Length: 409
Ligand SMILES: Nc1ncnc2c1ncn2[C@@H]1O[C@H](COP(=O)(O)OP(=O)(O)OP(=O)(O)O)[C@@H](O)[C@H]1O
Ligand SMILES: [Mg+2]
Image (tube, rainbow, N blue to C red; front, side, top):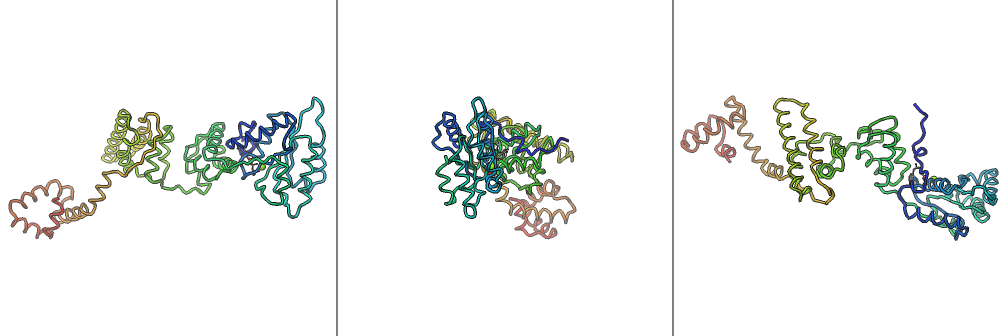
């Protein structure tokens, strides 16, 4: 196994264009660098500020490569504490690069690490450096708004970096997975991206901790990150399937624990037309997949052939999803299956009837099914033609007339 390189280093952007998101900041930064190239910067320093893991240090590194500059880099608090480092940086900043030599980029990282309260000296050093520099100076900070940093801010082009959006994070994670040869379901990337809250460094580190050395990841791997597999609601699951972009994405719903696939069939049955209209072909194909799933499901239960379950699951996810035609993303409101609604509404009645059937079954030593199919039709006839006899029968079965009527309706 090769030595463990942190993926955040391995995949640090090599060019400015590789820095994900923050388009506005990138444009401003490029414009500022170009003004240096032309020799007339309005501000000699740029202060890149914003939350952690958004690309501030990375863009400075990428710019050095892209503009063919020697990067002279130091952590701002080290510059204050180390005389040797200070001397080195000041020399690098003040020397004109000689004709034919490469230019330089001075990077003072994490400038808010200098405490303005205890460290007036530190701030003066930084301001002095900017004033004497003949090269572009880049500063970074998470929070540049301390009032005592005001005079420093005035020397700088202020460029704001914002938290990265979920989509940008997912895109980067996905491309890392591809380069590492790892198959990773969308839900996993989505979870990591949401958990990172805009911090791409955190997201990449999470990904490496669950994915390194594997060729495929599942939701179970997320347990390392304290992931509690949540039971997604049916609306979410139906949406995943009916708007899936790839078969793999549709199949992803199977990683939800204790997915109720029979319930899912009802939900798909109800909602396919909403999502797939106006294409009648798509609707027909989707129902075709669903009906075949139903056939397999019946066979599976009758013959106890549990191996058929994989076909059922494939048909209701990939089968239904691939019936759809483009464009997939019209927004529709899904609804609760009518069949389940009716069953729920009549639940009490059905339960009452079931109780009576059971009672008859017990007293006649038959199964409830047999009672319903073979005995009940005759009881009905007797009830209509000979009420007196029926009264006696009901008495012997220990059932009231009223309860009996519950199973007739
Ligand atoms: N916008 C981005 N595009 C691509 N990769 C990024 C981006 N932001 C962060 N990364 C990844 O995260 C790592 C850390 O990013 P970087 O050092 O640029 O963050 P930062 O903004 O300087 O954070 P801090 O404020 O904590 O110093 C990088 O090495 C890179 O792998
Ligand atoms: Mg940084």
